[in-house]
Image (cartoon, rainbow, N blue to C red; front, side, top):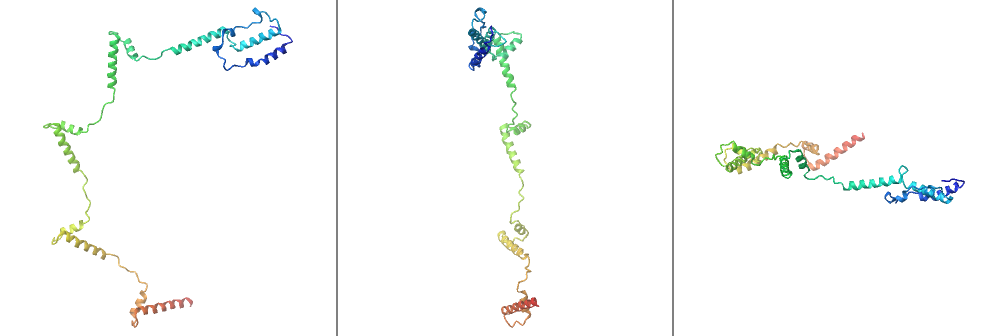
Length: 271
């Protein structure tokens, strides 16, 4: 390839064509063709370019071809790699990795002595597997509601049928539970009257005795009420009146007494 004083022109041409080198977002490996990846040489059969214009064009072609492929592989190598990648993808998509439903039976058959045909072995194997699974089911530990009656019947002399024994047993159990109920220790409201009546000579009917007893009880309670020891506000006037000759009515005496008392208090305030 020739380089001359026209290098500035080559630089300008490369820069003006830089948009041609920008990565194309729609460019795909699958769109590459062998023709675009073939090695570019300068001139026919590798001969030097015949003109400056051809030199620039071939230089641009080399740069663009270099941009379109890896710098570490040739065009043929890249095409082969792409072909291998596509083959691997197709192979992975078509590979069946499912496990046949009778794989366990097949494995067991292969490990056996193969003394019977696989079809018969498979039938026996699956039946045994189902039996094993069923044997692993949770055990029923629930207690039937008549378990107590059954246990009592088993230790009895079985002189009667279980149905009759069960009926009698449950009736006896109910009676036993009722006998264990809490005792009523409440006291009826007329218990005192009843006790007094029982201790009396019962000369009258209980109803009449109860009425009289309750009336006496009320009177007794009232007689036990606290005595009023309060002093009325006119007690002083009453006491003086009682000690006077009572020549006038108490009301008039009280009025005169209270007026004198007030005047006496006022006189003491000012003295």
